[in-house]
Length: 257
Image (cartoon, rainbow, N blue to C red; front, side, top):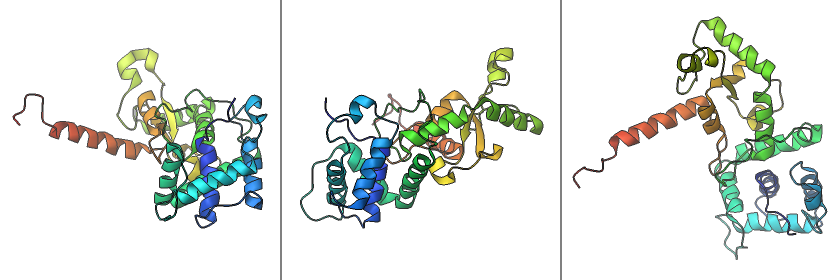
């Protein structure tokens, strides 16, 4: 059995280590490499069979990964190591959004230090089908989904909306479950954190931090694309408007060339 490919969470942490070192690789004996090796082996991602593999996320393997990051940076002029597409995507994300990426790494480190991430059960939606490298990584998406599925928090958000006198509809596409499904759809809606956890940090969720969404828009807010794995409802509305405008502007199949 071979060691599995590096996950988004692991790449976020390795990339942050290289960035903090001025985009230079780190050697196996370095204290930061040894500490990251220990942290990676404690992440609640891989099972006991993987953890028992010789050399799994050892200091040697961590050092090699820092070399991948350092030598594949756009400004590097020497010989580049061979690395996979997820690593290249993560390098691009750190290059383009360094502050946000470092915040994500810090949030993962804080969650592991507090024990919050180790206790979270796996969520069915935490795996994205695009194969893209996400900023949050799987663990922070898992934590967000657990929070968003808290029935007490969801009911409190529904009551807040009801008090305004507005219909309980999706804040992105205006879909109203009760209008479409009648009594079956009454009081049905999902909630989404407006601010990602790697920015908001490990603080108590407030009702104003949540948006009411239909299931489709909720999934699209969480769906990964290279260097991005979180969208606000406002950003998703803008994406929909842009997509519709592009459709309207595109020539039809019978248009003259």
